[in-house]
Length: 103
Image 1 (cartoon, rainbow, N blue to C red):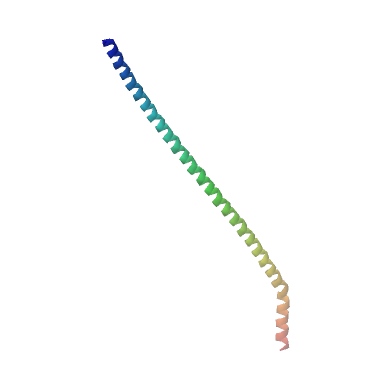
Image 2: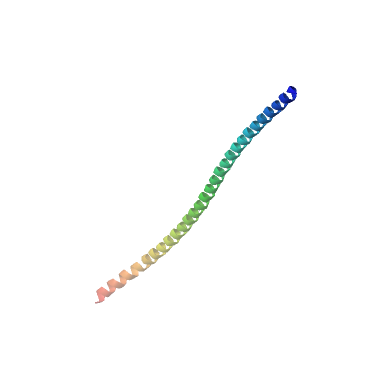
């Protein structure tokens, strides 16, 4: 009878040890899972930030290109106006002097 009682006590102790081991393993796996989730969240945040930066940089690039095109167009317009002024300058000066001389 004592053998049966000792066997039951041993089985109970072994069951408690298994239960404790299982609880420790579950805690370790939960900790590992939390670490993986945290790492995945950080990676997602980094990816999102990279995408945002790329979108912003693309917008800036497009704005710079448009600004360059506008500056180029305005410079062409200024050059055209200067060219017309240079061509017309002699005519204007001659007309003014002729009017002064004839008056």
